[in-house]
Image (tube, rainbow, N blue to C red; front, side, top):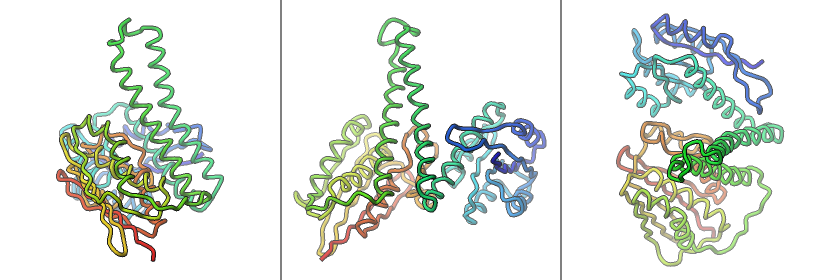
Length: 374
Protein backbone atom coordinates (compact mmCIF):
# COMPACT_ATOMS: atom_id res chain seq x y z
CA UNK A 1 0.00 0.00 0.00
CA UNK A 2 1.32 3.45 -0.90
CA UNK A 3 1.93 5.93 1.89
CA UNK A 4 1.90 9.72 2.07
CA UNK A 5 3.32 11.64 5.03
CA UNK A 6 1.10 14.47 6.30
CA UNK A 7 2.72 17.06 8.56
CA UNK A 8 0.16 18.91 10.73
CA UNK A 9 1.54 22.23 11.99
CA UNK A 10 -0.92 23.68 14.53
CA UNK A 11 -0.49 24.95 18.07
CA UNK A 12 -3.88 23.57 19.17
CA UNK A 13 -3.41 19.98 20.47
CA UNK A 14 -7.05 19.00 19.87
CA UNK A 15 -6.77 20.02 16.20
CA UNK A 16 -3.67 17.86 15.73
CA UNK A 17 -5.26 14.96 17.62
CA UNK A 18 -8.51 15.30 15.68
CA UNK A 19 -6.76 15.18 12.31
CA UNK A 20 -4.75 12.14 13.43
CA UNK A 21 -7.91 10.38 14.60
CA UNK A 22 -9.81 11.13 11.37
CA UNK A 23 -7.02 10.09 9.00
CA UNK A 24 -5.40 7.27 11.00
CA UNK A 25 -7.28 4.49 9.18
CA UNK A 26 -8.41 6.54 6.18
CA UNK A 27 -7.45 5.36 2.69
CA UNK A 28 -7.76 7.01 -0.71
CA UNK A 29 -8.28 4.80 -3.74
CA UNK A 30 -9.15 5.52 -7.38
CA UNK A 31 -9.59 3.04 -10.25
CA UNK A 32 -6.50 4.38 -12.01
CA UNK A 33 -4.23 3.80 -8.98
CA UNK A 34 -2.31 0.56 -8.66
CA UNK A 35 -2.82 0.58 -4.89
CA UNK A 36 -4.65 2.75 -2.37
CA UNK A 37 -2.93 5.48 -0.37
CA UNK A 38 -2.79 5.53 3.41
CA UNK A 39 -1.36 8.29 5.57
CA UNK A 40 1.26 8.75 8.25
CA UNK A 41 0.51 11.75 10.46
CA UNK A 42 3.39 13.84 11.86
CA UNK A 43 2.67 16.63 14.35
CA UNK A 44 4.35 19.96 15.04
CA UNK A 45 3.11 22.55 17.55
CA UNK A 46 5.18 25.51 16.29
CA UNK A 47 6.55 26.83 13.03
CA UNK A 48 10.08 26.06 14.21
CA UNK A 49 9.13 22.43 14.89
CA UNK A 50 7.47 22.37 11.47
CA UNK A 51 10.69 23.46 9.73
CA UNK A 52 12.66 20.78 11.59
CA UNK A 53 10.13 18.15 10.56
CA UNK A 54 10.23 19.27 6.93
CA UNK A 55 13.99 18.65 6.81
CA UNK A 56 13.88 15.47 8.91
CA UNK A 57 10.71 13.70 7.75
CA UNK A 58 10.33 14.97 4.16
CA UNK A 59 6.50 15.17 4.25
CA UNK A 60 4.40 14.96 1.10
CA UNK A 61 1.60 17.20 2.41
CA UNK A 62 1.56 19.96 5.03
CA UNK A 63 -1.62 21.05 6.80
CA UNK A 64 -0.48 24.44 8.05
CA UNK A 65 -2.09 26.85 10.50
CA UNK A 66 -0.92 30.44 10.06
CA UNK A 67 -1.33 31.78 13.60
CA UNK A 68 1.51 30.02 15.41
CA UNK A 69 3.80 30.84 18.33
CA UNK A 70 7.12 32.07 16.99
CA UNK A 71 7.37 32.13 13.22
CA UNK A 72 4.04 32.23 11.40
CA UNK A 73 2.56 29.77 8.94
CA UNK A 74 3.15 32.04 5.96
CA UNK A 75 6.87 32.01 6.81
CA UNK A 76 6.85 28.21 6.74
CA UNK A 77 5.06 28.40 3.37
CA UNK A 78 7.71 30.81 2.09
CA UNK A 79 10.46 28.43 3.27
CA UNK A 80 8.94 25.51 1.33
CA UNK A 81 8.53 27.67 -1.77
CA UNK A 82 12.10 29.00 -1.69
CA UNK A 83 13.52 25.52 -1.19
CA UNK A 84 11.39 24.31 -4.14
CA UNK A 85 10.38 21.22 -2.19
CA UNK A 86 7.86 18.85 -3.78
CA UNK A 87 5.37 19.39 -0.94
CA UNK A 88 1.70 20.32 -1.21
CA UNK A 89 0.89 22.97 1.42
CA UNK A 90 -2.71 23.48 2.54
CA UNK A 91 -3.63 26.24 5.00
CA UNK A 92 -5.98 25.36 7.85
CA UNK A 93 -7.43 28.51 9.31
CA UNK A 94 -10.39 29.99 11.15
CA UNK A 95 -13.17 31.73 9.24
CA UNK A 96 -11.92 35.03 10.66
CA UNK A 97 -8.64 34.56 8.77
CA UNK A 98 -10.06 33.52 5.38
CA UNK A 99 -8.61 36.59 3.65
CA UNK A 100 -5.16 35.54 4.81
CA UNK A 101 -5.78 31.97 3.64
CA UNK A 102 -6.82 33.19 0.20
CA UNK A 103 -3.66 35.29 0.00
CA UNK A 104 -1.61 32.26 1.03
CA UNK A 105 -3.05 30.25 -1.87
CA UNK A 106 -1.88 32.98 -4.24
CA UNK A 107 1.57 32.77 -2.62
CA UNK A 108 1.97 29.05 -3.26
CA UNK A 109 -0.42 27.15 -1.01
CA UNK A 110 -2.45 24.54 -2.89
CA UNK A 111 -5.69 25.36 -1.08
CA UNK A 112 -7.11 26.12 2.36
CA UNK A 113 -9.46 24.34 4.76
CA UNK A 114 -11.56 26.56 7.07
CA UNK A 115 -11.93 25.36 10.63
CA UNK A 116 -13.86 24.09 12.40
CA UNK A 117 -14.20 21.35 9.80
CA UNK A 118 -16.12 18.09 9.87
CA UNK A 119 -14.43 14.70 9.42
CA UNK A 120 -16.05 14.40 5.98
CA UNK A 121 -14.80 17.83 4.92
CA UNK A 122 -11.25 16.90 5.92
CA UNK A 123 -11.46 13.53 4.16
CA UNK A 124 -12.81 15.15 0.96
CA UNK A 125 -9.96 17.67 1.00
CA UNK A 126 -7.37 14.91 1.50
CA UNK A 127 -8.89 12.92 -1.38
CA UNK A 128 -8.50 15.92 -3.68
CA UNK A 129 -4.94 16.62 -2.48
CA UNK A 130 -3.93 12.97 -2.88
CA UNK A 131 -5.21 12.92 -6.45
CA UNK A 132 -3.29 16.13 -7.17
CA UNK A 133 -0.06 14.67 -5.75
CA UNK A 134 -0.54 11.48 -7.76
CA UNK A 135 -1.22 13.41 -11.01
CA UNK A 136 1.77 15.71 -10.64
CA UNK A 137 4.17 12.87 -9.87
CA UNK A 138 2.84 10.73 -12.68
CA UNK A 139 3.22 13.62 -15.13
CA UNK A 140 6.90 13.87 -14.18
CA UNK A 141 7.31 10.10 -14.61
CA UNK A 142 5.81 10.32 -18.09
CA UNK A 143 8.92 12.09 -19.32
CA UNK A 144 11.14 9.11 -18.52
CA UNK A 145 9.00 6.00 -18.36
CA UNK A 146 7.16 6.08 -21.69
CA UNK A 147 4.12 4.07 -22.69
CA UNK A 148 3.20 2.45 -19.39
CA UNK A 149 2.93 5.76 -17.55
CA UNK A 150 1.19 7.36 -20.54
CA UNK A 151 -1.47 4.65 -20.45
CA UNK A 152 -1.96 5.24 -16.73
CA UNK A 153 -2.17 8.96 -17.39
CA UNK A 154 -4.93 8.42 -19.93
CA UNK A 155 -6.73 6.29 -17.35
CA UNK A 156 -6.65 9.21 -14.94
CA UNK A 157 -8.14 11.56 -17.51
CA UNK A 158 -10.80 9.00 -18.40
CA UNK A 159 -11.72 8.92 -14.74
CA UNK A 160 -11.93 12.72 -14.73
CA UNK A 161 -14.49 12.50 -17.54
CA UNK A 162 -16.64 9.98 -15.67
CA UNK A 163 -17.58 12.35 -12.85
CA UNK A 164 -19.19 15.04 -15.05
CA UNK A 165 -20.87 12.37 -17.17
CA UNK A 166 -22.41 10.84 -14.07
CA UNK A 167 -23.60 14.26 -12.97
CA UNK A 168 -25.20 15.00 -16.33
CA UNK A 169 -26.87 11.59 -16.31
CA UNK A 170 -28.29 12.36 -12.88
CA UNK A 171 -29.58 15.73 -14.02
CA UNK A 172 -31.27 14.16 -17.05
CA UNK A 173 -32.97 11.55 -14.87
CA UNK A 174 -34.25 14.35 -12.62
CA UNK A 175 -35.80 15.97 -15.69
CA UNK A 176 -37.12 12.68 -17.03
CA UNK A 177 -38.83 11.90 -13.73
CA UNK A 178 -39.96 15.52 -13.28
CA UNK A 179 -38.47 15.58 -9.79
CA UNK A 180 -38.40 19.39 -9.63
CA UNK A 181 -41.65 20.10 -11.43
CA UNK A 182 -43.30 19.81 -14.82
CA UNK A 183 -42.14 23.12 -16.35
CA UNK A 184 -38.88 23.75 -18.17
CA UNK A 185 -38.24 26.81 -15.96
CA UNK A 186 -38.04 24.49 -12.95
CA UNK A 187 -34.87 22.98 -14.40
CA UNK A 188 -32.99 26.13 -15.42
CA UNK A 189 -30.27 25.59 -12.80
CA UNK A 190 -29.95 21.90 -13.68
CA UNK A 191 -29.53 22.74 -17.37
CA UNK A 192 -26.92 25.41 -16.62
CA UNK A 193 -24.93 22.95 -14.50
CA UNK A 194 -25.07 20.32 -17.25
CA UNK A 195 -23.84 22.79 -19.89
CA UNK A 196 -20.91 23.78 -17.65
CA UNK A 197 -19.97 20.12 -17.19
CA UNK A 198 -20.10 19.54 -20.95
CA UNK A 199 -17.94 22.60 -21.59
CA UNK A 200 -15.33 21.40 -19.09
CA UNK A 201 -15.22 17.94 -20.69
CA UNK A 202 -14.85 19.40 -24.17
CA UNK A 203 -11.96 21.61 -23.05
CA UNK A 204 -10.28 18.66 -21.34
CA UNK A 205 -10.56 16.48 -24.46
CA UNK A 206 -9.26 19.20 -26.77
CA UNK A 207 -6.32 19.99 -24.50
CA UNK A 208 -5.52 16.30 -24.14
CA UNK A 209 -5.47 15.85 -27.91
CA UNK A 210 -3.17 18.85 -28.32
CA UNK A 211 -0.80 17.61 -25.62
CA UNK A 212 -0.76 14.03 -26.93
CA UNK A 213 0.09 15.28 -30.39
CA UNK A 214 2.97 17.35 -29.05
CA UNK A 215 4.33 14.62 -26.78
CA UNK A 216 4.19 11.88 -29.42
CA UNK A 217 6.13 13.84 -32.03
CA UNK A 218 4.71 11.49 -34.65
CA UNK A 219 2.69 13.97 -36.71
CA UNK A 220 4.77 16.16 -38.98
CA UNK A 221 3.93 19.83 -39.25
CA UNK A 222 1.89 20.79 -42.31
CA UNK A 223 4.03 23.80 -43.10
CA UNK A 224 2.69 26.43 -45.47
CA UNK A 225 2.30 30.20 -45.65
CA UNK A 226 -0.26 31.22 -43.03
CA UNK A 227 -1.85 34.65 -42.68
CA UNK A 228 -1.71 35.26 -38.93
CA UNK A 229 -4.23 38.10 -39.19
CA UNK A 230 -6.80 35.61 -40.49
CA UNK A 231 -5.96 33.21 -37.67
CA UNK A 232 -6.43 36.04 -35.16
CA UNK A 233 -9.86 36.89 -36.64
CA UNK A 234 -10.92 33.23 -36.33
CA UNK A 235 -9.84 33.15 -32.68
CA UNK A 236 -11.78 36.35 -32.02
CA UNK A 237 -14.89 34.72 -33.51
CA UNK A 238 -14.37 31.63 -31.33
CA UNK A 239 -14.08 33.75 -28.18
CA UNK A 240 -16.98 36.05 -29.10
CA UNK A 241 -19.78 34.20 -27.21
CA UNK A 242 -17.82 34.38 -23.94
CA UNK A 243 -16.80 37.98 -24.68
CA UNK A 244 -20.43 38.98 -25.19
CA UNK A 245 -21.41 37.44 -21.85
CA UNK A 246 -18.71 39.46 -20.05
CA UNK A 247 -19.15 42.57 -22.24
CA UNK A 248 -15.45 42.34 -23.21
CA UNK A 249 -14.33 44.16 -26.37
CA UNK A 250 -11.70 42.36 -28.52
CA UNK A 251 -9.61 44.58 -30.79
CA UNK A 252 -7.07 43.53 -33.42
CA UNK A 253 -4.17 45.79 -34.33
CA UNK A 254 -2.42 44.23 -37.32
CA UNK A 255 -1.90 44.61 -41.06
CA UNK A 256 -4.41 42.79 -43.26
CA UNK A 257 -1.70 40.26 -44.10
CA UNK A 258 1.06 38.95 -41.83
CA UNK A 259 2.57 35.89 -43.46
CA UNK A 260 4.43 33.18 -41.57
CA UNK A 261 5.45 29.67 -42.63
CA UNK A 262 3.80 27.40 -40.08
CA UNK A 263 1.22 24.70 -39.40
CA UNK A 264 -2.13 26.51 -39.51
CA UNK A 265 -3.66 24.27 -36.82
CA UNK A 266 -0.81 24.99 -34.44
CA UNK A 267 -1.14 28.74 -34.97
CA UNK A 268 -4.84 28.42 -34.16
CA UNK A 269 -4.01 26.65 -30.88
CA UNK A 270 -1.62 29.47 -29.93
CA UNK A 271 -4.08 32.26 -30.74
CA UNK A 272 -7.08 30.45 -29.23
CA UNK A 273 -5.28 29.97 -25.92
CA UNK A 274 -4.10 33.57 -25.74
CA UNK A 275 -7.40 35.16 -26.73
CA UNK A 276 -9.70 32.88 -24.73
CA UNK A 277 -7.60 33.34 -21.56
CA UNK A 278 -7.57 37.12 -22.07
CA UNK A 279 -11.38 37.08 -22.17
CA UNK A 280 -11.86 34.47 -19.44
CA UNK A 281 -9.68 36.26 -16.88
CA UNK A 282 -10.84 39.75 -17.82
CA UNK A 283 -13.17 41.96 -15.82
CA UNK A 284 -16.71 42.60 -17.00
CA UNK A 285 -16.64 45.45 -19.49
CA UNK A 286 -12.93 44.98 -20.10
CA UNK A 287 -10.83 45.08 -23.27
CA UNK A 288 -8.54 42.63 -25.07
CA UNK A 289 -5.97 44.10 -27.47
CA UNK A 290 -4.30 41.77 -29.99
CA UNK A 291 -1.24 43.20 -31.75
CA UNK A 292 0.68 41.44 -34.53
CA UNK A 293 3.85 43.00 -35.92
CA UNK A 294 6.57 41.79 -38.27
CA UNK A 295 10.19 42.89 -38.59
CA UNK A 296 13.02 41.62 -40.74
CA UNK A 297 13.86 38.78 -38.38
CA UNK A 298 10.78 37.99 -36.30
CA UNK A 299 7.05 38.17 -35.69
CA UNK A 300 5.65 39.42 -32.40
CA UNK A 301 2.17 38.53 -31.14
CA UNK A 302 1.01 40.49 -28.10
CA UNK A 303 -2.31 39.86 -26.34
CA UNK A 304 -3.07 42.32 -23.53
CA UNK A 305 -6.09 42.35 -21.25
CA UNK A 306 -7.55 44.54 -18.51
CA UNK A 307 -8.24 41.61 -16.23
CA UNK A 308 -7.45 40.36 -12.75
CA UNK A 309 -3.70 40.09 -13.32
CA UNK A 310 -1.15 37.90 -11.53
CA UNK A 311 1.66 38.13 -9.01
CA UNK A 312 5.25 37.31 -9.98
CA UNK A 313 5.04 34.05 -8.04
CA UNK A 314 1.92 33.04 -9.96
CA UNK A 315 3.64 33.87 -13.25
CA UNK A 316 6.56 31.59 -12.31
CA UNK A 317 4.16 28.60 -12.17
CA UNK A 318 2.03 29.56 -15.14
CA UNK A 319 3.37 27.30 -17.89
CA UNK A 320 3.59 24.06 -15.92
CA UNK A 321 1.24 21.19 -16.77
CA UNK A 322 -1.96 20.95 -14.70
CA UNK A 323 -1.23 24.28 -13.02
CA UNK A 324 -4.14 26.67 -12.56
CA UNK A 325 -3.78 29.90 -10.65
CA UNK A 326 -6.00 29.52 -7.59
CA UNK A 327 -7.17 32.51 -5.62
CA UNK A 328 -10.41 34.20 -4.63
CA UNK A 329 -10.82 35.80 -8.07
CA UNK A 330 -10.32 32.60 -10.08
CA UNK A 331 -12.30 30.22 -7.87
CA UNK A 332 -15.31 30.14 -10.25
CA UNK A 333 -13.25 30.02 -13.48
CA UNK A 334 -12.92 26.55 -14.99
CA UNK A 335 -9.98 25.18 -16.92
CA UNK A 336 -7.75 22.13 -17.38
CA UNK A 337 -4.39 23.68 -16.51
CA UNK A 338 -2.95 22.41 -19.81
CA UNK A 339 -3.55 25.25 -22.27
CA UNK A 340 -0.55 27.46 -21.54
CA UNK A 341 1.87 24.53 -21.19
CA UNK A 342 0.75 23.39 -24.66
CA UNK A 343 1.15 26.92 -26.02
CA UNK A 344 4.71 27.19 -24.66
CA UNK A 345 5.73 23.83 -26.13
CA UNK A 346 4.28 24.76 -29.52
CA UNK A 347 6.06 28.11 -29.58
CA UNK A 348 9.34 26.41 -28.71
CA UNK A 349 8.97 24.01 -31.66
CA UNK A 350 9.27 27.14 -33.84
CA UNK A 351 12.37 28.17 -31.84
CA UNK A 352 10.34 31.00 -30.36
CA UNK A 353 9.58 32.11 -26.82
CA UNK A 354 6.66 33.38 -24.77
CA UNK A 355 6.80 35.91 -21.92
CA UNK A 356 4.30 37.50 -19.55
CA UNK A 357 3.97 40.87 -17.85
CA UNK A 358 1.19 41.23 -15.30
CA UNK A 359 -0.03 43.42 -12.47
CA UNK A 360 -2.76 42.29 -10.05
CA UNK A 361 -6.08 44.08 -10.70
CA UNK A 362 -4.59 45.87 -13.72
CA UNK A 363 -4.17 43.16 -16.35
CA UNK A 364 -1.75 40.87 -18.17
CA UNK A 365 0.23 41.03 -21.41
CA UNK A 366 1.42 37.86 -23.15
CA UNK A 367 4.08 38.21 -25.85
CA UNK A 368 4.97 35.45 -28.31
CA UNK A 369 8.09 35.92 -30.44
CA UNK A 370 8.50 33.73 -33.54
CA UNK A 371 11.82 34.06 -35.40
CA UNK A 372 11.80 34.25 -39.19
CA UNK A 373 14.12 31.81 -40.86
CA UNK A 374 16.20 33.14 -43.75
